[in-house]
Length: 423
Ligand SMILES: Cc1cc2nc3c(=O)[nH]c(=O)nc-3n(C[C@H](O)[C@H](O)[C@H](O)COP(=O)(O)OP(=O)(O)OC[C@H]3O[C@@H](n4cnc5c(N)ncnc54)[C@H](O)[C@@H]3O)c2cc1C
Image 1: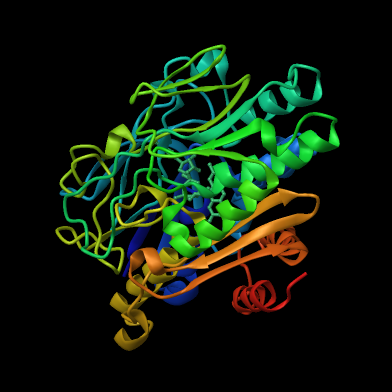
Image 2 (image 1 turned 180 degrees about the horizontal axis):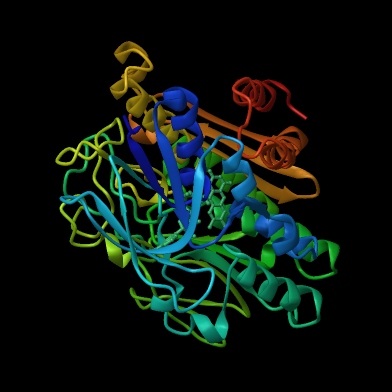
């Protein structure tokens, strides 16, 4: 008897965690293959801190995954996923290690889609000439060189997001409309950059405008949390602009918005629309924009052997690695349940997403946010200080050392430390 084959598309936060959780819960009842075009995990959340510390993030934020997967007897295929056919249970890939490869069809019994989203900088006019960002090593290094090698002249800075286009089809009633995909990063970037600017004899917070297309920045982090955070930021001198709808274009002098407002800026740090990948658009498993539809057990309602987790899933809003992590646990348990490895009671436990986010504020401090109020819950915690900073750094260290398998006890301990120790 051959074992059922689980094919996991994507090997970053969601893909790696899903594969590991499936192995953990379904044990040796399945064979597992992960496909990604790169053979390392990019640890995105700490790229900005590396940039400000003038360290190349490519040296410190890439964790090789082939070895990590091998320890759990999980195969890895380095290839571009080109298309998928959920009716014939086939995925077409183009192996990417050398050019000239032929297309291959991979068959699956269970499919886990964890391909993330496309960060659509290319849809922002003027980004190539005038924009900066911190979402990967290429852009991180461009900003690092601009800041540390004399490019930045001390002019005004604007940090914020373009509009996020979320699908409506099949959206659960508890999930509100999000106008921006993930606004922890702009808040973190503005706060930590202000500290860097003061340390480098530039004007700090008072020279930075934090902007959002939405009514309130990072609304999904809880209104009380954000109000307190904005209060603190305004006392530090930051300027704040909201309801800007969307970016029209970047120019040498600043940012123009679709509602005709402008922000003057020499340095423009931008987070774009999180767009679904083209290969997922128009599929019977996707919503009208291309995010993969799932129920709360991360299973597609029409094709129950197809799961999605992380940024490519329609219910992952905001687009956060911490929510991806919660979803991967569910995927692992669901597949294990189906194979008789764990009970339905354990696998089907109800779940409400939680926003967990730690953002660098510079000077060895960070903010910590824990909230589920945006999804209808009543948790809203905000802390700022040295303990969250220590947790942010140690989480990354622990992640690399354990190959992404953060021990189960560490999250509650981190929550306890962040929420109880005010330093
Ligand atoms: C600057 C920044 C800071 C952030 N900070 C935080 C934070 O502090 N906390 C937090 O929880 N979240 C944070 N996030 C969000 C977090 O990075 C994402 O939610 C997370 O990366 C989603 O994981 P994922 O695996 O779903 O997608 P991704 O990380 O985007 O991974 C998708 C994977 O799929 C692969 N892939 C895509 N298309 C193909 C294809 N066609 N063929 C083969 N492979 C493909 C990619 O190579 C990649 O490895 C931050 C995001 C940014 C941009």
